[in-house]
Structures are given as structure tokens and as C-alpha cells.
Amino acid sequence: MIPIQRLSLPEDVSARMTILTKRIGLRDVASGARKKYADNLWDGEGDVKKALREVLRRMAPGILGCCMYCGSCTGTDIEHFEPREHNSLQTFRWTNHLLACGPCNSKYKGTWWKCDEETGEPLLVDPTRDDPFAHLVLNLREGIYRSPTAKGESTIELLGLNLPARRFPEARKRAHENAWVVLHNWGQARRDDDEKGMRAALGLLTLQPFADVWQAMLRQAVLPGADIVMRDEPPWVLPLLRDEELRAATLVEFPVSATPTTNH
Ligand SMILES: [Zn+2]
View 1 (cartoon, protein in one colour):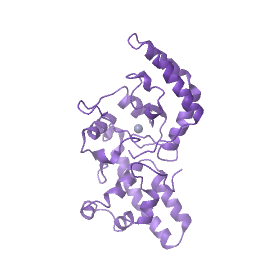
View 2 (cartoon, rainbow, N blue to C red; view 1 turned 45 degrees about the horizontal axis):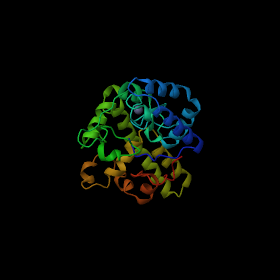
View 3 (cartoon, protein in one colour; view 1 turned 90 degrees about the vertical axis):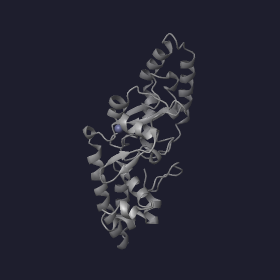
View 4 (cartoon, rainbow, N blue to C red; view 1 turned 180 degrees about the vertical axis):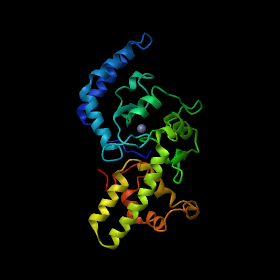
């Protein structure tokens, strides 16, 4: 998971969603009428969903729009962060929409919803509101996540981010090794004044699935003790991860204020 900047919806879509939310709010909750009404509206509003999907794809990492939770390609589903089964008023609320893959949306998260009893904070990282890297720490060698926070722990467990069955640890390890090769190519292209080669390498680093791996590499390279923690990286890797030009072009910081130059 990497930080994601929420873009604006087209005005007509936004206005339509406000009207729909108001209509839903007029229905009775206790009898279940509100939920049924909201579900019917959601099923029928094909144009709204098409527009939502378009903007969500532009916000998501990767060319095709990767899942905003697990980072694998491809995000196919409009995910309701707070499930509409839990709160129908969130059905058409833009700040509640993310792009997710089918398994994250349906099999793993489903209608799950849990908040911290003291703070009321959802126990799930929302990459448009939270800094994922404050909650999810990637062990690059193992491709496994661990977490220093309850929100992070719950996120890893809920989405199965370390589950061998989802094959993410293996995929992250491969993405890490691929990044070594691409970094090498970028460094070579820069030495050769080969701008096209540099651009191609930047595209590979930023637009591939599992964007979290590259972002974790950039972050961990400048932490105290990085020389020891990252001692198994090939010798060209750490100096390049600390290169200002490369960091400026590819690091996605939280909150996301500007689109990196290589993004789409
Ligand atoms: Zn996913």
C-alpha cells in the first residue's frame, strides 16, 4: 500500500452523488428500507459507477490501476471503505470510495468494519487518509509486512497481506530484485546521457504492480542503520536510492501534494 492522492470528481457526477445521498438519508433506517433503497440505487447508477471507476483508476498506482490495498494488478472493484452494509449513507460518498481487486474487496474484506474502541479510528489503513508507511513496514528480504500499530496489524491480517496463499511475499521479493536491475539500468543510462533510457527505467520503477516495494526501498535507504539493514543489496543500490534526482522523480510522500513527473 502506498499513499494515494484523492482527485476531484467531475462536477455533474459529484452533484448527482450528493442528491442520491440526500435521497437515501430520507429513508427509514430501522425497517431496513434505507439499505434496500441504497442497494437498488447502487445497482442502477451505471453512469456514476463508470465515472467513479475512471477517476479511481487515475488515482491508483500502475498503468492499469492496481489495487489500492494489496498493490497487485488489477483494481477491478469500487470498494466502499466503510461498507454500505454498515452505513448506507456512505454508498455514494466520494471520500469512501477506493479501487480494489476482487479478492481484497470481496473475499478478504467483505463487509468487515471495526473501529478502535477508544479513538473510534477504523482499524484499516485508508491510503487516501493515512500514511501507509506509518502502519506497514516491509521486510524487503522476506517480502513480509509487520506493523508497529494496531491499525497496521489489523490491516495485514484482514487483507491477508502476508498470506502464502495470496503469493504476495514471493511477488514482493521479485519486485525488489527487479528494482535492482532497473536501478542499474537507470544509473548506466544517466552515465551515457541517455534520457530515453532513464525515462524508461523510471517508468518501470513507478508504474509496475507492487509499487510499495520501490517506495519501501526509497524510505529504508535513508533510515539510520540502513547500511546494516540493507547490507545484502548489490553495491550500486544504496547510493542510487539516496540519489536526489531519482528520489525527486519517484518518491511518493504523504500527504501526496503533487503527481510525480513519471506518473500517468
Ligand atoms: Zn487487492
